[in-house]
Image (cartoon, rainbow, N blue to C red; front, side, top):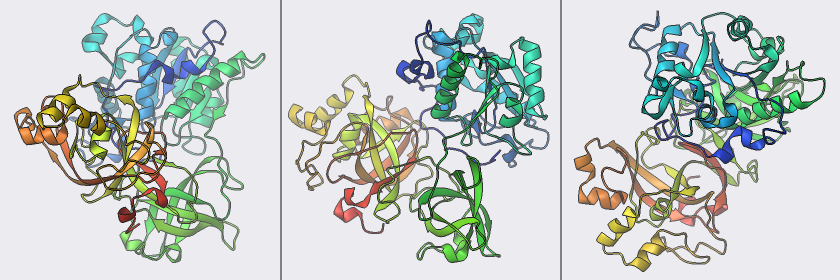
Length: 527
């Protein structure tokens, strides 16, 4: 019910998306013979649960009033959340879901648009042993299956979710205790999870849309509760995110949701727990006097911008922001991005928040060594990043399989086999790489932030012929037909001090809180 964009367009579209079996939710369960039954029916809300943004917010699109054509484009105007992509991929391809059915329940008044998007979004069929195993082969043509084909029942019309779920029981014959429901609205006037749980349906509250964590937690909790004697008929509970208590001086990265510049105040949205409130998203007041020096004034802040705040109690006992600090991420002021942080030194101002992106080896090392000077993607991942922005480089655990083509390109540039080997690996402990700066005693590893880069312009290069020009191939270290069509210049790069900084990577551009001491000395200025 938030209405805004929950996460930027994913860097990886569903044409290439996959997830390994060890990441499946069922991989965290006992073996099939030892586990309680899985849900017979998975029910997903649509807006801000499976996809974002909510359809009612797309007022600038033609046909908005009556949701007529052409409507929003899948992947451009509306996109699947990363957790939803992972859940759908598992449901389609994992054999343990073969007996489960999928349905959707949405209160949107843009039903025509929703049905069109259901037909447009599709999921790769790899193993194809999950819920698609019962589908007609014609529904799986081209190695993909649409959401419309996956859903046995689609309740998409304005009403309360209780009626939606009652209709689903009548249509499928599946009892409420055998359903698992995911929605981004909890309780209250427009809540869904609380009233649906009253039917006896286990409901998973997803305040930030369906994430991999909420998907796993929902499946695991369902199976565990069904396995407990006497509870198999008492499944009507709401699963909420873990509660997070914040003391008076705690710091948090939050998003501005309301602004009243003429009155001198605004509100930020916080997920967590106040002293007397349940774990839900809540709006917290801040006054212009709380703005840290150098953060500008209210007229320069925008709804959707990420800021760092400290929380305290006012004289009236209500929670408020005691300090508001602008987050210098270089991200578009109206874009919300997922964040990752170590929590250490944050409140003391000894960390800095920077945008980050992830690459796999060997190309991450090639870029960090300064050999690869252009990064390409098939989606404009860097469109919201201003030229000149400093970004962190995270290295994924996987190796990108290009069949050794990068070696051929490097050899054509005159690099020896020994030099190629060095450029495609992390620096050895204590080695001074191309940045002429000691990297310290700790090793760089996969699954860590290893370098900082300054990005330049991003340009669209649609022509394969243009991408195949010698200087482009050498800068990207990929052949024209293999590289992405959106090319971003890497102006400069340097390895972090004292080795890598381990974090869990994410898709697209995300935000990382990193100790300033990790940054190269000549990159700290301005933070």
